[in-house]
Length: 87
Image 1 (spheres, helix red, strand yellow):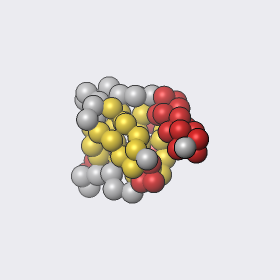
Image 2 (cartoon, helix red, strand yellow; image 1 turned 45 degrees about the vertical axis):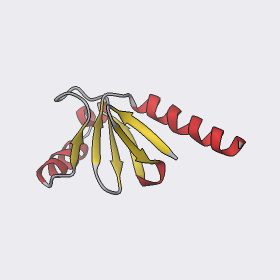
Image 3 (tube, helix red, strand yellow; image 1 turned 90 degrees about the vertical axis):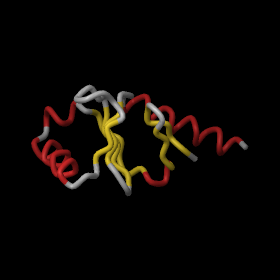
Image 4 (spheres, helix red, strand yellow; image 1 turned 135 degrees about the vertical axis):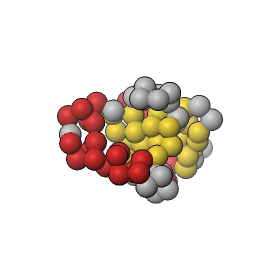
């Protein structure tokens, strides 16, 4: 199963470690440091326009900055699971 993160970016649901709101960056120094280190090390992929992201998605391969809210991404993930289980 896949999750559409915005733009042309789709990832396997199994690769997703966490889907977090960008609001957490304002509240947590350690989250800001994590994003800074990930940028320095080349693990960030910006799907959203520069500094206009609503969520960050940590996967086994990269960290994605998405224009789609974490709540919407969670709903998409849950809907996919329901469809899969219904089949």
